[in-house]
Length: 123
Image (cartoon, rainbow, N blue to C red; front, side, top):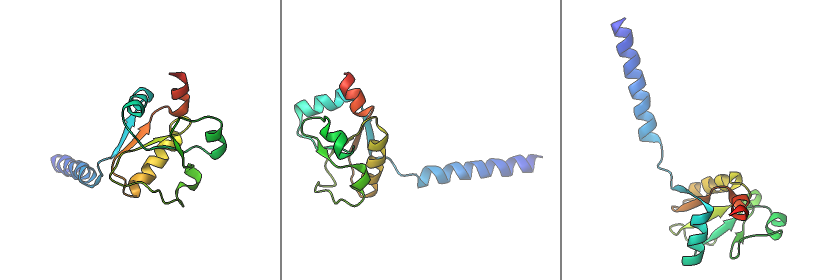
């Protein structure tokens, strides 16, 4: 019984070690709409609105660039990969997907706006 417990303990510790050493540190930071508003007022930032064109045309944050998630995979963005990039959508789902895609493409400082345009319009 002691040998079985020892083997199980070693397996668990090995699994935890593998997970810790192979997981990448996330460069995606979640921010709220108040933080976004503050940065828009005090900094020059790149804000990607990843909603579809008709959603974007229905109302968007001044200065936001429309880059629909549905075509983001085929689009080469003209932004330096080592500069901050902010991502927003309607509710936060598509922006999280877009942020992951940007991370995979090598962008190193990504900010995902929690709650998206819904939260922006409610503030």
